[in-house]
Length: 380
Image (cartoon, rainbow, N blue to C red; front, side, top):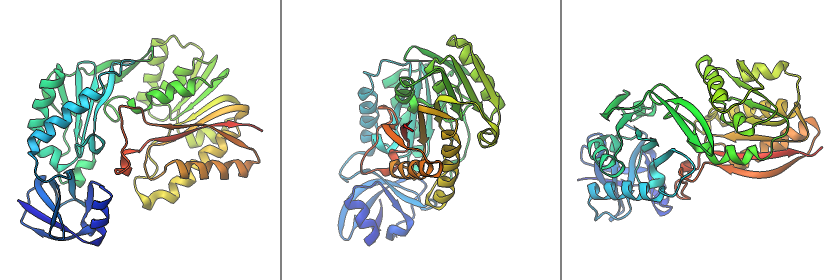
């Protein structure tokens, strides 16, 4: 079996039980591992972890377990079963995340369930290497009518093929998500992520409790935030024509009648908008994929926040989100403070928001807390 020894930097990561070991944190590699091959991690002469090796990736070693004396196949099956079991009580929806990668102890494996459909992403070489075992376990434990692989671009960084494909049975092209009494049409095969932003489920409900008469939903995607508010008037702004059409369908599904859809760029929209709103939701795509893009991400978020706050009524509420762990609560608070100072107002933090419970986050896996948000009130 391949043995990888960590250097001083890697030793600190192991002590923190961080499951990602980068190439700069490795002292030596004994053996010539294939993509995703099982290997042992060493710190000095001590064997500290078992996991998956990929020397073609910046993340060379992904820890599966910090006990090296385990059967890898058995661990994978047990982790899948534990992940499925822990979500059995989630009853307010027909769609949820079954497996949240490292946060469920399964590096690089993301699995979402839409009714009887299962959508999988094998984002690491290790998960890809055990694909057949994973599919078999899901078939046995979940009993879906079909399993579909949604290949993310990150697979390219792992030197894996980026190809969507049916892995088992039949998968619906179009599907209706039921969630907290709302309904949303989505396309499972041809869509962003695995079909719907399941991670915002709880936030949609929380934010809707602070709705006034007029809602502005920026980066609206399916229109879920705006639809949840059930305001007297809602304006959606979405750049994708296909997704903007989806908002119209979803409004009809939920009997939302008084609305307007702006099919265009949010930044340009804010340059000319003069109407005022009681609730504004800003849920942009990830501006910062890594630390190198942090500064530009902060500038973009501040622009959005400053110009949205100008449209917000006194006493109104604004929710702003980041879907990158690089921009977390601290960064959002800093941006919110500087934005409020820039236009001479005060903001109250009403709620700290995060991904829903079926997307768990572990303290030793910082990237697993990737969705953070603030609900703010404009007090003067």
